[in-house]
Figure 1: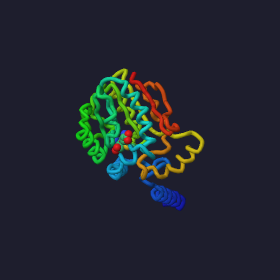
Figure 2: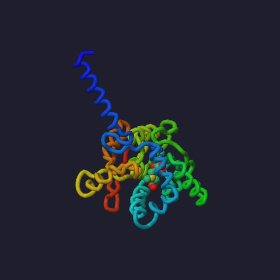
Figure 3: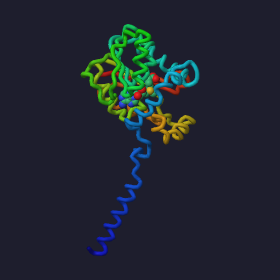
Figure 4: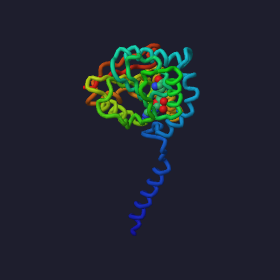
Length: 243
Ligand SMILES: C[S@@+](CC[C@H](N)C(=O)[O-])C[C@H]1O[C@@H](n2cnc3c(N)ncnc32)[C@H](O)[C@@H]1O
C-alpha cells in the first residue's frame, strides 16, 4: 500500500476509534435517552412511594392533584369508553365519573399492582380493565375508544411520536385525546431550570425539556387547544380531536 493510502486508512481508523469512544448509548443528540429499561427501573423504584409523593394534598402531590382535577373535569363531561395511557398506580381512577368505562394501560407491573389493589379495595366497577402494555404498541383495534387521556406520561415514554400515532389509531372518529404534562418553556427561569435538569433525564424518568410541538403533527388529530393549568401553569392540557 502507498504511503498516502496508508495515511488515509490510519486517519479513518483513528476517526472510527474516536467515534466509538465518544458513543454513549444513553445519549441521543446530546440529550439523555429514555429507554424502556430505564423507565421500567425508575417506576419499579417509584411504585411503593408514588401515591405518597404525587397524590397527597401537599407539596408535589398538591401540584399534580390540581392539574389532574382540571383535566378530570373535562374528561368526566365526556361519554363512553376512556383509555388512560400510563395509568400508573391509578391515582385518577377513583375520580373518573361512573358513567365512563375505563381501561388503563401501563408498562410497569409494579405500578399496575398498586392500581389493581385500589380497584379491588375501593370497588371501582367502572374500571373495566388494567393491562400491562406499551403505549407505543397498543393491542386494541382501530377506533376502540371515545376518549384517550394521558397524564404526566407523554414526556416519560421512550417514543412519544409512536404513542401519538397509536392514540390516533385507537380513537373513534370524533373522539378526543387529552394530554396533560409539563412542556418545555421557551424562555424565563423555567427554561433555565429545564436546561439544568435535562442531563438528569434518565434518572428522573421523564424529560424536563419536552416541546409540545412534538404532539401536534399527526394528520388524523386536529389540535383543539393547549390550555395552561392551575397552579402557576407548570402543567398544560393539550386537546386533540380524531378527524
Ligand atoms: C409519571 S407516571 C404518571 C402516572 C399517572 N398517570 C399519574 O397521573 O400520576 C408515568 C407512568 O407512565 C408509565 N409509562 C412509561 N412509559 C410507558 C410506555 N411506553 N407505555 C405505557 N406506560 C408507560 C410509567 O410506568 C408510569 O406509570
